[in-house]
Length: 335
Image (cartoon, rainbow, N blue to C red; front, side):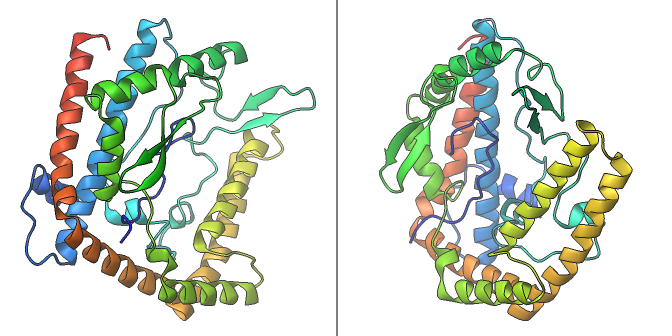
């Protein structure tokens, strides 16, 4: 059975690759419970996904140390992960897709106009770009930014290297530069093996659970219900992407084109979110989409964990070694 789902959570420019207490309790654990039930599967998956995020942060810090040794002192916005993530947060757009109408509009789908983590570039007729979130990195010339990414990834367009993982098939890693050096240094020269282990441990990658007949039938019913209400969405992810696009358009209209105020932009987005969420919630209830996805996802995961216990329960130990290695590099002050 393929590895369990892991939504892509890398920011642009990075090649793909109970909660807190449960995660801490599993750190370094090598003896899985018998039998593996849902609670055990949830706890170890959350621990592994959180550990993988810590590796990402370590790679970013070490690669920036390398860049600063080369004279680059201005960096793009860095990675951000919640301090105490939940599985609903980690798997939300994949599994837990029904909107909660009791939440304020910005929290229903997690979209808002005034979101500093989203930087848009609006290009005018002279091919000159204006940024919705000006920052020191974006204020540099294109030549300086190209030089930065060439130093970081080995090329200005951040071209990755395709690698073949023994158990998972094709993947990608940094094609060169400081990120490649950081990956090798933090992993002890075994970064590709780490990617393979992370996939087996459920910390990244995809799975066939979403192709299960039960999920596909519920998804078809949801889409048909939404179509009858005047929408053209194949899945809840497409719905969310559409609302994110609207938020981006409104942000550009507010910050760059100055054709609206923040208050008016937020009101327009909120009205669209509420109207869409009401129909979405009704179609989720009619199709039972989230209930089916939740049932099938964990059915697949429990079976998967049962067949890959060593990979699942040894992953935290490996990531601890990698983050400790990163801390030593940072303490030394050079890669």
